[in-house]
Image 1 (cartoon, rainbow, N blue to C red):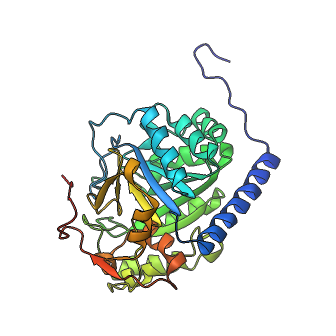
Image 2 (image 1 turned 90 degrees about the vertical axis):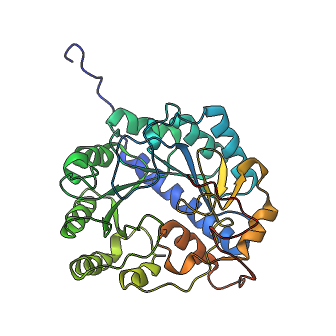
Amino acid sequence: MNRGSMPEVAKPNPAVRRAKAASRKLRELAVVGHALASTGHPVMAQIVPMRRCNLSCAYCNEYDDVSKPVPLEEMLRRIDHLARLGTSIITISGGEPTLHPELDQIIARIRHHGRIAGMITNGYYLVPERIVRLNKAGLDHLQISIDNVQPDEVSKKSLKVLDKKLQNLSEYAEFHVNINSVVGGGIKDPQDALTIGRRAVELGFTSTIGIIHDGDGQLKPLGDAERTVWTEMRSWKKKNYSRFNQFQEAIANGQPNDWRCRAGSRYLYVCEDGLVHYCSQQRGFPGVPLAEYTRADVRREFLTEKTCAPNCTISCVHQISYIDHWRAPQTSSTSPGQGPELVNIRT
């Protein structure tokens, strides 16, 4: 080894990878079974340990370049409370979560409670040593959204920049990896999504395609070129990470969806300030501190219709809500931004 070079990182045993994948699948099936049997707990919470991001994608309103990381002890308290609420899946997002200096301990706390641990990242810091640390912490799922093949003024999340990181993941990750490509939202060449999706499948990952929402998380229909790419990638059934995305067909056609949004109940968005929101695009509603959020709040929001739902494009909320699409008609209604009993803290 040359002086100053990094020690070689051992690659995982293929048998270990297979065993972890089998265990993960069984735990996922248990999550679905529990969700079908009971409506009194969140299925997924998305939690933000770090609002700051190393990038500044033009379409994104979920980051800044100044925020400090949430202290570890506070993050652990929040995860403990999510576990008390019965949350099955806890996904770490941002900003850019890999900027948090104690990320491994946050992931380990999620797994300590027996919950499925996910993370959404831009992938810039995924060197082999960091990936092995994520393995040891117990990460179950990782998603990277790649916006284009070549970086431009809209996004630096490009295949050119990230391809080496994807190779690292292919060689070292013991967790599931999904690569999400996108159309809409100012992405210049829709064909880039096909190139990114094919590369993901080539490296052994699952591949999805999403539609970038506008600044309010609302409907943005596809043009003809975007629709062609969308249709082709949607036909890749074998490698599709999520089956619960029929709602995007309506979005692609510029049509509203008729569905029951269970945000605030089956899905929680917990910002860096520790407040529970419907989603990343409706911060401030209900705007309740997580430490004060109870199962009664979960039950109330399960039955509360959100008037922003028909034109919503937030895929994680749609996918989680789909579990309960067949039951419990919502008997009350709230309009984010209009409800007099709610405090809008959006800045």
